[in-house]
Image 1 (spheres, rainbow, N blue to C red):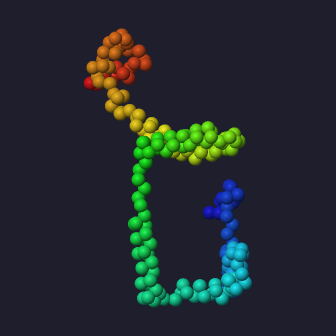
Image 2 (image 1 turned 45 degrees about the horizontal axis):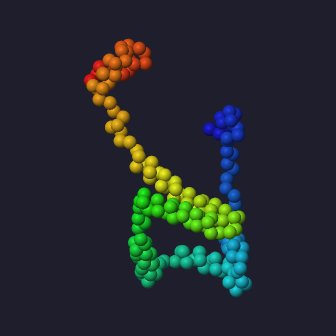
Image 3 (image 1 turned 180 degrees about the vertical axis):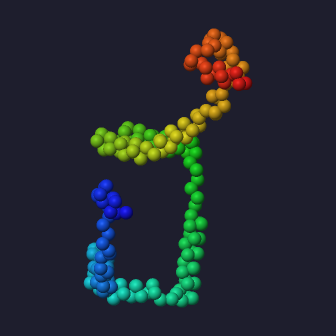
Length: 187
């Protein structure tokens, strides 16, 4: 298959010649230890990770899990799940809550502008508070827009009203009104 594509589109042909040689485990352990120590910027010499630590870690994964270790892991997992279950469920933010948050932020800006004698500092505070209020104002705008959404039935017109409209305009067979005439004739 590659022979055909080599002639048609040589840039996409992958010329696989085999895998690279596998490095020795000792070299890999040494490289892992160096990477781990370089990531720990404040590591002191006695806390440094060495090749023996890496070998011990690898060996620990091949050992069978004892019953005590398994029970301990299950208890830790159960404790984590309890903490997750106890964490409070965030309540839905209502329109009134959003309005109160935004109004409080705007009131704060008004107080800062009125009482702070340093115009530069008060301008920075106003800009920062307005930026922080942005997500709340967006949520408020979305909730207000959602509340104003019209019901789909408002867009439907009864067949009697459609017939009356056609009769009043006097349109019987122009090209623009043919779909409307067809729809009214179906009812």
